[in-house]
Image (cartoon, rainbow, N blue to C red; front, side, top):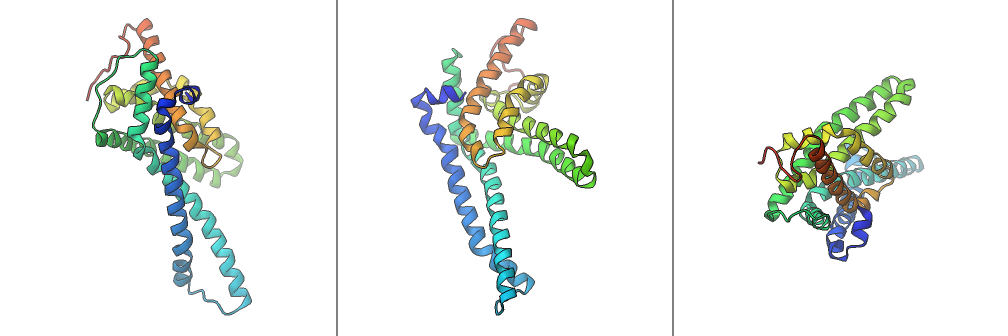
Length: 245
């Protein structure tokens, strides 16, 4: 997927959209939190200047708030940048399909592409966040179990990413959500194998924004391979979309 994006100048403008949105949102949200949040917290806890100890305490709290606000800003920026980039990412899907010889599909309105991307993101978060949160709580309650819980959290995160990436080509096809979920789950070994390295790379801040266009292009190729494989084993026609919306 990354090789396709790098070798296709026609998709470069679309590939830059997630990174541009991510950097812009992270900067705006992070600066806003840094500028206004410390004063709000100082006022809420009644902390005022006037002494060395108070000054040190303010500096420590402000440093912690800055780090936390940057982390939250990055998470919120990723959550917002992906659906806002939906139309651009779907253009990459169509370009990848054309490169693989798939017939051009009817184009969707701009806001429909964005709505589909938002719905996919929310569904992925709704599935993975409770799982990751539950595993995190368990790791706090049972620290020795972290040796098992940490890999499980990585798998849950990988499945969420796999759903996000693979949903773009399936959404362009016009498949119903239940059919998309069933197809991804039936091929869970392939999609998890595809998403697991991306989850590891995603541990580095900002890398997800760089990988997102290539990941979507790669997921498009994966889903086409899955369809063609199914066509040879169960007789389903390639590019067929069961359960159209």
